[in-house]
Structure formats: C-alpha cells, structure tokens
Length: 133
Image 1: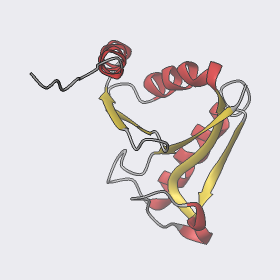
Image 2: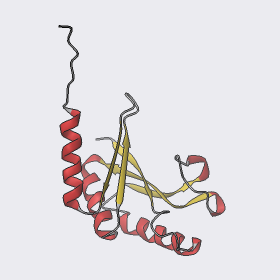
Image 3: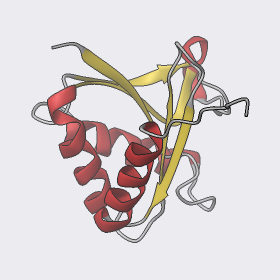
Image 4: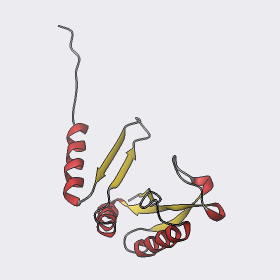
C-alpha cells in the first residue's frame, strides 16, 4: 500500500511562542509520532515549502513537519493530533491534483471530524444533471 505525504503545520498554534519554543514543540511532536504512527517524519526545508509556509532558521520552516503515513495509519495520526492538541482547532486540507477538488475540514474533536467527513462523503456522491425539457 502506498504511503501518503502529509504536512503538519504547528506555526499558528500560538502566536506568542518564541521561535525556540516552537522549534522544541515541533521536535517533540516529531519524536512522539516517529515509529508506530508515521513511517517517516522530518522538518521541512525552505525549498520544500508548501503555500503559506513561514521561513525559519538554517533553511528549515519553523513549526512544519513532513510525514509519510500509510493509508491504514491516517486515522490513528489524526486521533493522535486531536488528543495532543485537545481544545485547539485542527484544520485538514486536502486537494485532488487530478481534478482540482479542494476540501478543508476544521474541527476540535473527533465527533466534529466524523460529521464533516460524512458530509464530504455524501457530497462526493452528489450528481447533478442538466436536462433540456
């Protein structure tokens, strides 16, 4: 089964965090995820920057991690992030490069995430036909 690349952006978690504190937090989260949750996790270099990233020290983007996750572990990763940052709003952005479809989900708990995911699934089955009468 193919791995999926996921960027995790912690840079907007707390605007009061100093760069050093953000770097420590990012490293801690990477260490916690490494192993069972993700196949690979690393800091993001400036030349790998996704849109809206923030430049950091030594060519790395502060607060941004790049992970590789098996499809089977995505839910476990999302659960971990929800528990780790309990009470914070998580924003999940997904784009289908083939057809340009973009989905953005914002949630604070697993129930909200499941509700939004179900709504997206229902919309993905929506069909509209235009008929000449």
